[in-house]
Structure formats: structure tokens, C-alpha cells
Image 1 (cartoon, rainbow, N blue to C red):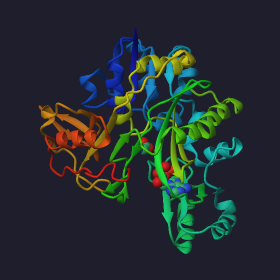
Image 2: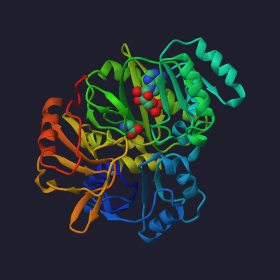
Image 3: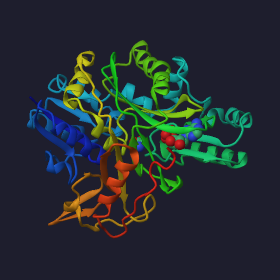
Length: 423
Ligand code: AMP
Ligand code: GLY
């Protein structure tokens, strides 16, 4: 039996906590900093995800055996490297890559070079800085609209621009290089536009073996019919009908195996999740992006479909024994519907009292942006709660989440009622 610390505070971490809590291998669960939902499953520790010394203290004070990192930021900042360099922490099991591997998410240019080196299918591209701006402009002229510009570094999901006009794209490129997204856009990746339908594939690896988790699709736009601004994610469904056996075999042969082998060949040790943002171009999978963590809200659907002991899988990934672990997947459909604050992803108010949580019986509620205000639970972010459900098919699972969503109320509550419309 082991003590586990989850680093993070969103719906993803609550869903992971829910799954971990079911394991017979768990002794005690801690979450740093966690949220109102995780406090129901374990002990929240008020330490930020980038406060490495605070995390060290949480680990030593609570005799933590395994650390699972939810978000990308501490990984890109080198939390795993910090553990490895510390004589006390270096033997603790750790799920999440080192800074080097985390560059797959932390630098689009690094990820592109990696894919080129290992012949992994992805869009054509050119990396541009102020030094080769004219080359960038020439490259744009060889392409046709729409044009895709991506900030090289982490930009909280906002660093991708898709533009139709060449002139406008040139000026946006200059603005980005001039620091529109701070240091993250001092380098920009110009990419060929790919058209098709997207899905999220999650792989857990110990750096040599891997297990493929249930595939999901998330809905990023705020408006129904995939319109309006991009958000952190308005909901997710799993499985994804078009990601059938034929498609997934291509994904494994052309993308997953070459990625894991590429990490080995490049001497990049990697224990953790690889999240492949894929697009199916007429049935052919291409990589849109790598992330080095699980997706949010995909996790709030994917965790429901993992039947095996998740802690056993995490131990396998951390210690390099994943080859001995099995991953059984629930054949049912799982969905996650995100309830958000009015105004999100623009400005919104916080502190609205949430009512009706106790009336949800046939769905799971995962907290994202909530805070305890005395007796009440209040909103504390743009994405507030996820309502996750099982069903024998997608429409059954969605009906269940939508029925339970009606019990919940707070001022300004909004959610998309059309998830799965494109499937
Ligand atoms: P990313 O942050 O790289 O996931 O990009 C955000 C979103 O932009 C993706 O989910 C896609 O919808 C879109 N996108 C990114 N790159 C491309 C591309 N090369 N072609 C078409 N759409 C893209
Ligand atoms: N749902 C997409 C992400 O987590 O980046």
C-alpha cells in the first residue's frame, strides 16, 4: 500500500483522484493544491504546482511513495529533474517526464523536429524567429489559406492563430515575434493547415513499454456547432466512433510506436503520459500536437472507462514495469459535460453560490473551479464543474449528464448542449 500525491487542482486531478481512490494499493491520498472536490477524497495541501520546495515538504511530511503530476507547467519547469537531483526525493516514484521530454509540449519546434526525425506524420512547417523572418514570409507565400501560426512555447492554450488573409498573417507573425505571447512567441512555428476531425489519444509509458488509454474527443469552442472562441474544453466523449480499430492500428504503427522508440533513440527518459492531439485527414492520422499530460476535460471521461487498477498502472509507468501491467477498458461510453461561468472564456465573475450538487445521483461531479465559502460551494474559475456519466451509447451517456446538469444552478451557468453532434 502506498501514499500518493497528485499535483494539480482541476477537474482532471479530481477525476484521477476518484479513480486512484478505488485502488486496493492506495494507503493515503494527498492533492496539492487540490480543490473542493478532491478534499472529499483525500487531503488537500495548500502548495502551488510550481512551488517545488513546498512539494518536497509535502512529500517528506506525508511519506509519499508516488507523485503524479496533472498539469504541464511543473513538468516543463523541471519538477521531475528537481526530484532526481535531491538525495531524499530521488527514490520516490514519479509519473511525469523530465524537463527534456516535457519539451514535446513546451516547445512546438522541439516537437516538430522530433516528429521529422522519426518520420511521424504531421503538418509541414517552418520555425521562425526575428532572424529568419524573411524566410518565414517566403514560406507563407508558398502556402494556401488558412495559415496556421503557433507560439513555440507554452501559452495557456492561446498560442495558436488560424488566419485566412496572407497580409494579416504576416502582420500577426511579426506581432507574435515581437512578444504578443511574451517569451513563448519569440519563436513561431508556421504550419500547413490540416483539415479533418480531431481526437485525443492518451498513452501511458515507462519509456520502453506503453499502454493506450481510451480515446476521447474534446469540444474546445464555447458555442454550439463548434463556433466562437476557444476554451480549455467544454466537454468530452469516449470512445470516438471514427477512431475505430483500423484507424487506431494506424495510430499505433505510425505514431505511438515511433514516438516511444524515438524517445529511446534520442536518449530521452520518459515516465508518464503522452497525449497525442490527432487529426484524421480522410482516415489518415496526423499529429497536431503532443502534450505531456492527460487532457482536461478528456480525463473526466477517460477515467470512467479504465477498469484496471490505475495505481498499479502508475506504479508500472514510474518504475519501468509497465510490461507486466494490464489495462482493461470498460466497453461503455463515458462523457464529460463542462459547466462554465457566464462570460467565459472572456471575463467572468467568481464567487457565485452553487446549488443542487447533492441532487446529482446518476452522474459523477468533478470539480474544476470551485471554492468553499463557509457552508457553500462557490464558483472560482471559468470552468467550474464537470458532469460525467456512463451510457450504453453516446446519446444515453449525454442524456444522463444533461439531466443531472439541470439540478445544478449558479448565477451565469452555461454549458454546451450539443456535444457529440459531429459524431
Ligand atoms: P494546438 O494548441 O497545437 O492543439 O492547436 C489548437 C487547435 O488549433 C487544435 O486543436 C486544432 O483545432 C487547431 N490546429 C492546430 N494546428 C493545426 C493545423 N496544422 N491544421 C489545422 N488546425 C490546426
Ligand atoms: N482538452 C485539451 C487539453 O487538455 O489540452
